[in-house]
Length: 73
Image (cartoon, rainbow, N blue to C red):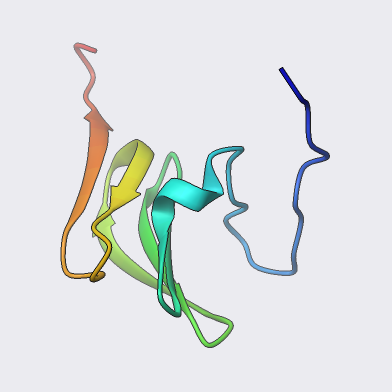
């Protein structure tokens, strides 16, 4: 197993260690405790509010699957 240094940028929501699963074309999906975000051309846009994690994007960039946490879980 290889450990990579974390990637950091100037955006408010940072990418996780599995960034490759959340990137398709020029679009990246990021998840945080306050929402699900799209990064395109260096701009961060909120898609949905809520506590999300582990986003995965389809190869064509049309679909995203992410785990949404609730108060019960």
